Length: 196
Image 1 (cartoon, helix red, strand yellow):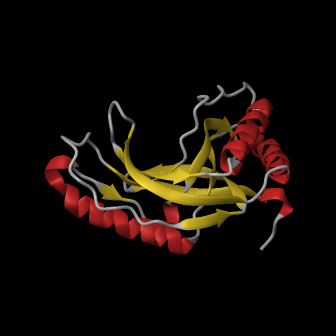
Image 2 (cartoon, one colour):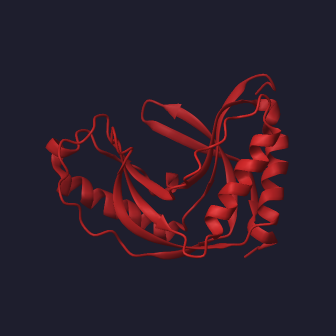
């Protein structure tokens, strides 16, 4: 990849594999219960692609990756591992819902603090600077996508209650394919120097 080429980037934390598998199973059950009339073309995402986006950076020059990785490491160094819990299902965005997600609760505020620090640090090294993300951060894991907004709101099964810890933050490159996005980790850092 040339340093002038652009890459589509975002920063995220990942649920553990067992939690991701449980969320994906729930999404398959939710897709069946929603039915084709309520959620046309609902496509359940593979467990290994599930993540919790902290900052979407969009198309960035490939030459910025090293600086972004350094900023990621600095933001992660001052953060703490996050204790998280799954919550209710939610259709996003509220006006034109095309994604089925599961809310994630951050009772200690650690994830929100990490998101603010990442937004500050990563946006500072981008040239031109990326727009600051909205002030309100809504933690969630998207588990399925639809080509069209659902008609009505069918009852969804109860979401699995899962508690999990995230101790690493990752910058992913997103490759957009007709079958769906593929994600490639280009940098990662442990939170607060935690390893294990």
